[in-house]
Structure formats: structure tokens, C-alpha cells
Image (cartoon, rainbow, N blue to C red; front, side):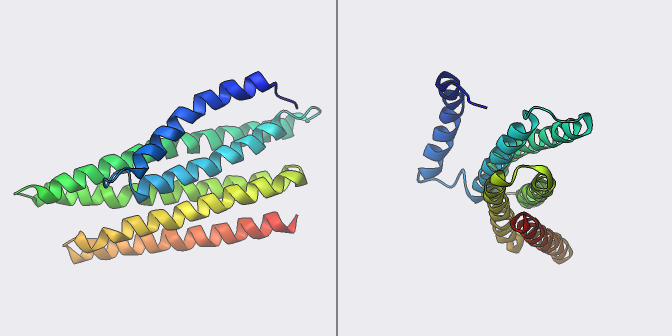
Length: 211
């Protein structure tokens, strides 16, 4: 399908301000936005590329009803994940700011515990959503045209990088958790998510390259 140049320009106009704003904010000499938001942003890029592939496939003429339903399901799943990742990008910035305030407060107590919990949980959720995105990529790769596989591989690598990046951000906060049992629980949860993400990326990458 050929999209008119005017349509390209209108869509680019819609996306560029948000992209430029985030990148400009990222370059500033201040702590936020930081690595967690970048991990979510990278995952969002991968999901956007995945959505492009799914839309191209869903718009192909001659689909039987079952196949058309499949592409609609993949599109809905991708858009829901993209929306969640956009929320997590902002949530990570808020979590970092809350943690910074809690660490500076004269009386830390439960406020610090709560802030730490969110500062670790937010990148953990980024990892979980990115893993779900990899699964959608794997399903998409089973039925899409072969010339779109390379785009899916790029999307998968962005999501894989987001998983590892979010892991590093969450793990960096673990030493701040004073209660050993909580620290060990978080460490185990993060380690499991990282391993699952790496295994999922390997399976998806293998499946795609086999085509």
C-alpha cells in the first residue's frame, strides 16, 4: 500500500514533538529522566515497529476471517503494550523523583521503603511488558511476509535491550533496601525476569531467523 506524502508528513508531525522533547530532556545535566525511562522508550520504539508490521499485514487484501481476526488480536495486543510502556516511561521518572525526595527527608521510615519499592517495581514491570512484546513478535513472525522478518528482528532487539537495561536500573537500587529478606526477594524476582527475558529473546530470534 502506498501512503501519500502528505499523510507521511501529518503522522511525522504528530510523533516528532514527543520524541524531540524526551531526547532534549534526556540530554540535560540532571538525574531525570534516566535509564529506566530510556529502557521504556527503547521498548516503545520496538513496539512501534512491531505495530507497523502488524498493520501492513492486517491491511493485505484477501485474508480469510480467521487470519484477519488473528491480525486484529495482534494489533490490539501491541497497542495495549505500547500504552502500558508509555505510562511506565513517565512512572519511572516519578518513581526516581519520589526516591530522591525520600532519601533527602530527615525522617525516612516508611516513605523511603515505599519509594524504593516503586523504584524497583517500575523497571521490573518494564521488563515484564517487554517480554510480552517479544511473545507478540514471535506470533507475528509465524505468519507475516518474509520480507518483514528483518523489521521484527530489529523490534525484538530493542525489547531485549529494554529488558536488560531495566534490570540494571532496578538492581542498582537493591543495596538501598535495608531489610535483607526484601532485598533477597527483589533480587530473585529481578533475576528470574532477566533470565526469562533472555530466554524469550533467544527463542524469538531463533524462530525469526529460521524463516
